Length: 193
Length: 193
Image (tube, rainbow over all chains, first blue to last red; front, top):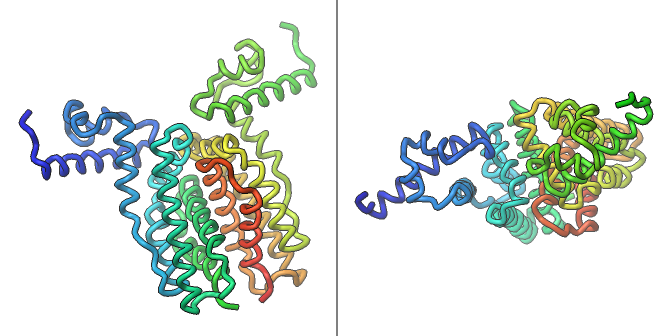
């Protein structure tokens, strides 16, 4: 096989990651094999293993790809903070298959150190971003002065994970009602009294 | 084999359920086989199958046993409501092995209708109990009159599930900090302004 240029290799790697995400959302974590991913991507097993050393490495890379899509939070107002947490953390997990994959990753984290490190790093980034946004809102006089930024970070982190669990077990979530609930959470915790 | 009296059969069934819960917490859902449970309970496979038709039926029965241990919520005050949600729903899932089992059950609910029905029924019971407690607190003048009982039910349900996720991936949770966070959630949503 001729050596691939770096750009071609990166493109093929991304093609495999997207095929893997498709299989993982469609069938679930346990039911997805390297064979499934190769069939979905239209490649040979040899080609697969030239990009990823193992199924485990592939799952880690898919997790990295999905978490890279989550952006920063907006600290211009309480409503903007609530909206950005909803848009970037909750809305992407609204389709039940996506939510199920998130929960499967959480469950699998117990026995896979690489997954656990990724999972906790993502969740800690979210928590710390919210904590920083709350401190910035308080400093700007846009949130109650006694707001407990650390506790709000923990509560918002648990909120995002809890909504993910809901989405995984209940199909057809009411997106508008979920968005209102996220707003109510932040307004209750932060609105000046 | 002589027929067992009903009392003896119930006692043996409970012995198997407790052995199964031990294995499930110790090894996780996927790694626990009927053989493991028989070894832990000190019984033969024949004896096992005289009590449970399948591994699936056993997992369902363990789930029923664990959810029966969750009691009602206390609606005498906002703090009492927060305490009872913490004591009965969050504290039992503080040991990481217990939390991991909860998340594994949630993940497995996607592909097991019996588990999904149990999981959603438990979570809906919790949500409705909290909604009823909030209405009762409002009626008694102990919560803000404009409290959105339905939204508080959803938020508290997600909170319980989210904390479960946290406990599954982070060892050594700070119980006092978690309890304060649960109190802050209910106080923020319900305290009269």
